[in-house]
Length: 98
Length: 222
Image 1: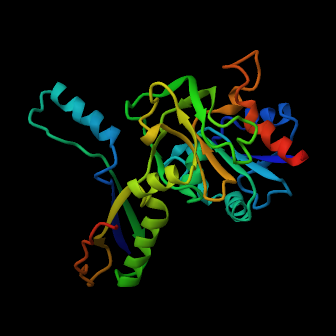
Image 2 (image 1 turned 90 degrees about the vertical axis):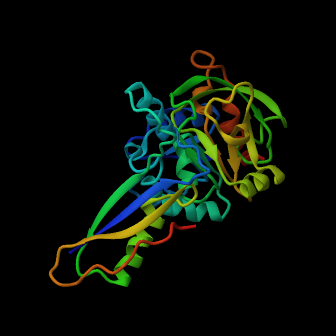
Image 3 (image 1 turned 135 degrees about the vertical axis):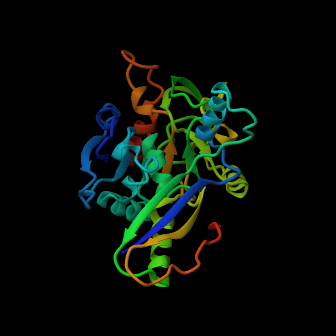
């Protein structure tokens, strides 16, 4: 079993009202010096079998199709953990999607 | 004119939309999200509400409901489709309309009688309005801010596909004060305010919304 992580963030040019709300709350709680907060989503997707390029590509398709809306969000897919024995996770961190 | 109104789990305004269709002289046909069949309707309304609890993103799960496969296919063949509020969000998630709708810039739910200008009266849904008619229609949304990249906005403006624009204060941060847009062919319209709540003098903000439903009935009768 392998766990893939999909991190979804609103694109930089898209207003992020939730992040703005958090940014507004932090100084009220005494946290000074916070310049910006943006809020996204993290998905942990567990998939049968070993980590391989096909599975990674499939998780990317999941992200494009459902988990993220590419019109307003960017996403990054990484391999979080391999719960099977030997296979080490390949180096993955991908560039944000266009 | 048989107009289907889709009910998703969490739809809120399907009954009002069906009522508006009947008041305008059409026949309202109840369509179910899990049914991959439009039952021979001539047009479809995707009503407002919180389909699938707005989980993930508004409209993101509804887009994959079996009925939407049919709606997308028939929209491509020119069937008139109107998405109101949550229905507009579903149309954007389905890529039947460009752009997306995000949380209101002021972060509060907006509920008010909203002045609008109907800038495109060449769609089957707006046909009965005079060009640039100013109307008052109920608006109620938490995630009604229309966003799109600059080339998309230019195309929408250049091709006259902004169907309705907010007058007065922008209620939700929509770019270019956009309240509603149409696809290239003009048969698919998404609208954030709720014309189905403005169809009777007794309740709501008057009857300015009736034209969205009456126009279609008139068009069919011609």
